[in-house]
Structures are given as C-alpha cells and as structure tokens.
Image (tube, rainbow, N blue to C red; front, side, top):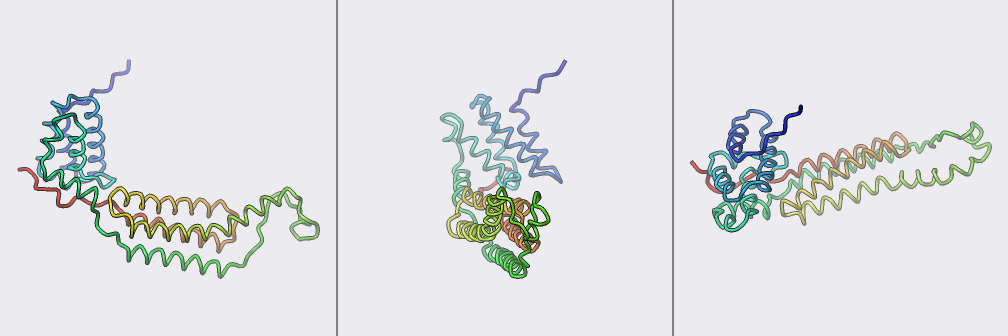
Length: 256
C-alpha cells in the first residue's frame, strides 16, 4: 500500500534554509526548492502562523547571499510571500526589505553591452564569410532520377513547391538571424532596465540561438551556409548567457 506524501509544514522552513546555507554544492537548487516550498505554504497555511516563520527567515544571517537558479534571492522570495498574505501582514514587512524588493525589481545593472556587441559582431562576420565562401552547390532531393539531376529531363512538378520553399528558407535564415540579433541587442541594452525585461531579453537570445540551430540542421543548405548559421546561433546563445538576472545587492542588513 502506497504511503501518502508528507504534508508541508511550517516547521520545515528553517531546516531547509539551514541546509541550503550550509551546502557546498547545489546551493542554487536548494534555494529554488525553498522558494517552491514557500509558494506551497502561502497557498495552504494560515497567514497568522506563516508570517512569523517568514520573518524568521529574513532575520537569518546569510539569507541575502542565497540565490536560486533564476537569480532570485531567497530574501526577495520571502518578501514577496509576506506581501501576498492577507491583511495586516503586508504592513509588517520592514521598510528596508520593501526597498530591496523595489530595487531588485526596478533597477538592474547595465548589461555587458561591449561583450555582447563583440560576440554578435564576430558571429555575424563569421556567417558573412561563410556565405562568401559558399560554392552554391545544388541540393540533391530524393525522388529525382539521374536524368533529372543531370538536367537532361525536367524535374517532376511535385518538387517545385518544395524546392521553392527550401530556397526561401535558405535565403531568409541568415537575414532573420541578423535582424533578430540586432533587435534583441537593442532591446537588451536600451529598453530592458528591469529584472523582468532583462529576463525577456535573455530568453529572446536563447530562443533565437536555439531556433537557429534547429533551422540550420533542418533546412537543406550547403556546408558553408550551415556552418555560418550555426555560428550565428552560437553567438546568440552566448549573448543570452551574458544576460543573467541581477544578484542580490543592497537588500538591507541581515539579522543577527
């Protein structure tokens, strides 16, 4: 007979925090598990019982240095949890914690624009050189006879649409990667000045790089074009990895 899963308890909060603080490895994973556990308790527990436990977490020394895999500090997650509780618990949040939350959500350090620009420039130049060196080899499609491939007889009509679509993708992919990189770079360096916008910019680069890799491997292209598309995709991925969410800073003094 299967045993029921243990019910989440407020008493587990502090031990989980102590375990994460004392861990030498996988600290970010343990911080993420603590965040998820807090979210469960917010939905299940009585706010009057949960609020003191959350305040105790904020007073624990070292809580500001503990950050999950998404770059969210534990102190920020706890402050958000307190603000989500019923009245009057949001009014009990210390002013320095409210200020730290506002600073973390609204103000982020400037992105590494120089490194991002250099990475994208190298990737773009590499892709351009690959296209210049391309020998424009004709694509070989299954289903065509030797005579059709040699140009002795015309290819069957069923290949017309596929060939046209493949050539369109081949020509559109590098321009799509270039324009997408330019727009994502401008958004990340000019517009994205909040943590949420920074996260969107990072996801945009990662999606651009991932889709670029998939398209480079799926679209029938010459070896030089494929190499160039992969280079541009890798450049977008590297640029996205540079846009990490801000680390905790100035989040108020820790308790004793």
